[in-house]
Amino acid sequence: MNTKYPLFVILFLFYTSPVFSQQITNRSFENWLQEQFMSLHHYMDSGDEGHANIYRETDAQNGSYSVKLQTSIISNDTLYGYFINFDPDHDFRGGDPYSEHVDSIVGYYKAGLVAQDTAWFLMQFRNNDIPVGAALKYFTIADNTNSWTRFKLDTGMPAGIVPDTLVVGAVSSNALNENPGLDGVSDGSWLQLDNIKFYANGTEVTPMINHDFENWDMHQVEFPEGYLTSLIFDITTTPLSVEKTTDATDGNFAVKLTNVLTSDNDTIVAGITNGTTIDWPPAGGLPLTEIPDSISYDIKIHRVTGGSDDEGWLGFIFKKNGNILHTFDRTYNVSSLGFIHENIPIDLNQYPEVNQTDSLVFFAWNANIPGSTMIIDNIYFHTQSSSIGDLSFERMIAFPNPASDILYLRFYALKPENTQVKIYDLNGKLLINKEMKHIQGKRDLKLDISKLPPGNYIYQVQSGKFRKSKKFIKL
Image (cartoon, rainbow, N blue to C red; front, side, top):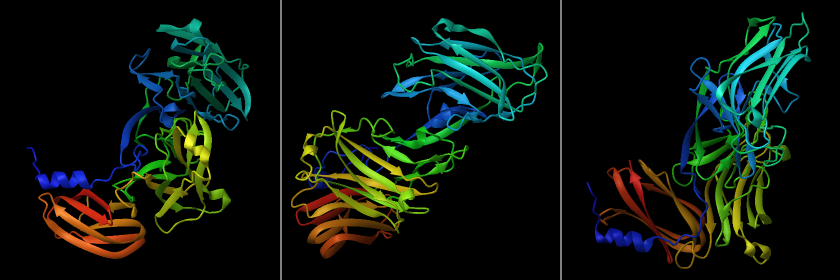
């Protein structure tokens, strides 16, 4: 059924809506994308990092599934498809307990390597942390095949020797090289493996865990639309380093950054950016056609220890042709009682180089201590087109929306002004009328809407020449 509104309402919404300046995408973190990732059971892999470059394939040499690893290069970042049972950042520590003699390894593969790229499959057997046998298979362009092909590797383990640990891993490209395009690391290289078996003197012995790649885990993760986050490092932690929260100041949601520990006891520093890389400085950003006079946002901080070792960081980078012109930032090493409304002035007289800006990058990093959090909401760029008239209001927000009994209106008045708040139904009937005298600074108005029937309504705020109207839902 089509809903028709009176002409009064249509004109009301048209003429009272402010002209907004250019804004960052998803500035209030209302939009989240849900994605599913497969990861190989028992192993650490690229699926655990929220990368869709490890695949459970039904094209199997044995059983129902095989594993396919693929390399992708995005904004000069190389994303390898891989699985491992060790920590590559700490002297390859880890591995699985294993206590049988193995002199050869047999498996099956398919490959599609690009240019001079090399994929690897490696194993090392240890006893008291000393290698007692190893096998390494390089796959090159000469090994490319779309048919399952058998390979056999000798471990070199001396007769009679029994290990206590097995280290295993596979990667779709030359993982020792971090520079895409060099040394053959190529976008699209892939390696597919299945049915890895161990032998001693021609007799099959206990294989590695999940040797036929039948067992997989599914991860469902929500990402804030328009942002790159620290979820690229790990999506298996509890809590996640970046999550949606209803503890918000504008709309229904905000973004929460939490420093977390991985299963290897490594700390993930929670981070978010609208750039295309998570390293420093982030590449990409918002193409900027209008330089804001100031940037505001709301932030709530929890610090486990506080001080310089527990310092969060939030800022905005103004760039020209990829080069940094100036960074406006603030640091946070003390917990807050609630949300803090921050406003960063962009002084073009003091920083005239910012006038040359062609892009802007937002970033936030959440210190070093596990458990510390930052909640961020309502990033807003203020310019002369941000509102109508004399800019008597910096901005105004209403929450929650939908609301059941109470609707809160939060004002940031730049100068003393009489302010009227009205609520209409969709037929233009005035239902609530409140007035505040000469408000300045931050003010919260609590409106009792409990007696309103459920449905859609319009609130209007007028202060001086500023006027704003918007719909809200009464539950």
